Image 1 (tube, helix red, strand yellow):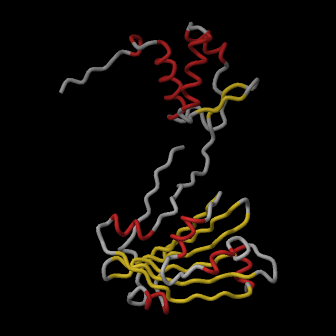
Image 2 (cartoon, rainbow, N blue to C red; image 1 turned 135 degrees about the vertical axis):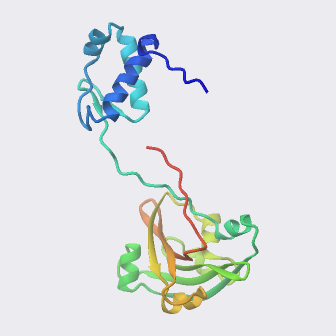
Image 3 (cartoon, rainbow, N blue to C red; image 1 turned 45 degrees about the vertical axis):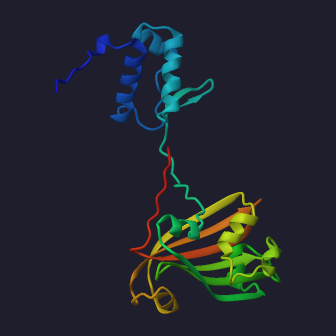
Length: 241
């Protein structure tokens, strides 16, 4: 295959200005926080119009390479922490999409006055009441996930009357309770004790744990820990800068 290269001088001027600035940023010649030459400086350097320079800087800002500050100029964008946004999945739908049979079992349910640990998890005041649920989701004949969920009964009092031996709490929440914010924490753990037994794993088997809180207008609705056998699950998130 013939490699055809276009000489820089033959490139449209705006494209050449952008390529030059991108090269200077990506090579580190211009580092995070450094100022890009002012528009009038770029006009003089390249012998072009203000409109051409403005268009190039807008393209660089849209690409996430620079930030433009009114009256201050344009600066190389500093790196920012990225959060992978994970959807709140319906485990039943997830298993069925894999072409496997879904099964669900409620292992424990307890309505109680919030313990200190409950209050810390849900941000509750003394005297609050919670519903603690443990259940197991299976794919075919294998345990797929162990769910430990804590619900703030002040936020979702109606769940106290739901038969959670029939309907999984997560599925009911998705269908009935709107939320405004979610927080995920992901960890790797070794299965031990009751967790290993519930997932039919040898003690010490690697597991993936997803801990999630969902909020509505700043109030925690639920805190859940989903434990998956390490060979059964992966997390995929698509995100942009």
